[in-house]
Image (cartoon, rainbow, N blue to C red; front, side, top):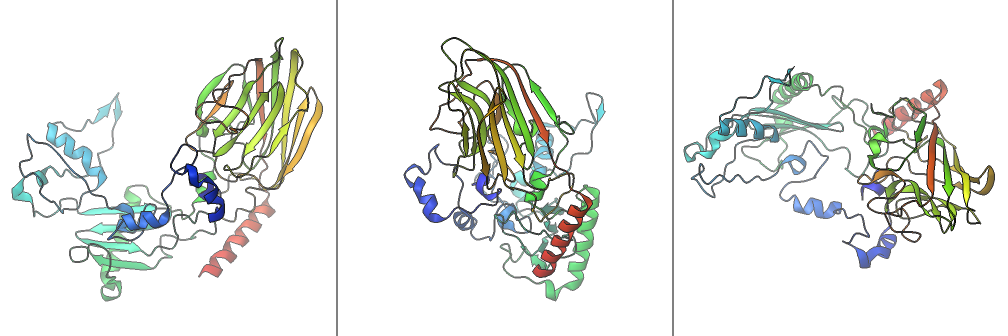
Length: 436
């Protein structure tokens, strides 16, 4: 489950079994187990995220074109990469790749047409795609004319935390395979061909420079949480004056690993109000600020395992009110540094719920989400789309029946001091030394 894995949480089997009766339904965040993924990759080993193993990169493909392909049901074993699909379609359609699109000069299309393989006469023809690099999170490989240079797997895909390889280009155990004789990467012959290993390493570096792969980055969780250019970059205050739904999380305020204050200016009609003021995420990770039976509620959904909750004791009276949820984070900030020690992520914090300036509930969260909310849910104001963060309280869309005058989010993200940075670097160095 990505929400647990990438937040550094391993769910014990006895806890998983609590959801046994609803496995495979919308009540669970269904994700194939590593064991089954490995089994289904037979005869290869490893799987996705492992760019150096064919179990992570090799897929079968079926091409059907009855009017053109007469060698129906035949097998082709030429090396083909996904970037070859577009050149193949263009050649089949007799269309040249455009040099300009909307007046913008295009880069050359990377890839080699495999249209030639459609003819029976070329069933055993040499592959025209002769060289291809692979790289993901510091693990890499290079294919060239039947040879495959691979880095030995040094991180299982579910190991998102911990110190990353500081020099993934060179600090590797290199493996070499002759795919013309050993298509499953079973026989490592690197020790027998040191000059070939050296040559392929040099070729990978040339390809990496050409296709802007450098610098290699061996981190996982740190890369996920690292700030990215978007419309929220550099902003500390966000103001919303009307309902809005469906904003992707990447374009919404990030409330992880930071202090923040959410203030809602609303008007409650006669007879009371209920509904969602602000939410992000859903059933498996997220937060919500809403009115339940007229009472203000703020809830954090911690990957469907815990739901810390703040709530008022009385229903709001008709009229205008100011509701505030203030959270003070007790930890280092991510700042602009991509690091691997994670001492500043998922730290405790104290939340305080106020109604018209009066504190109505306060409590400390001993842990918070460090990396992600639910990827396939959005940031919504005025109602809740898809799944809710607390099924026990409401069901989406749970529209707000009060008038929303303004909702403000103020983010106070702590920056790393020079001393913090030095401490993190020292921690990384110790972790790397221990691993070596």
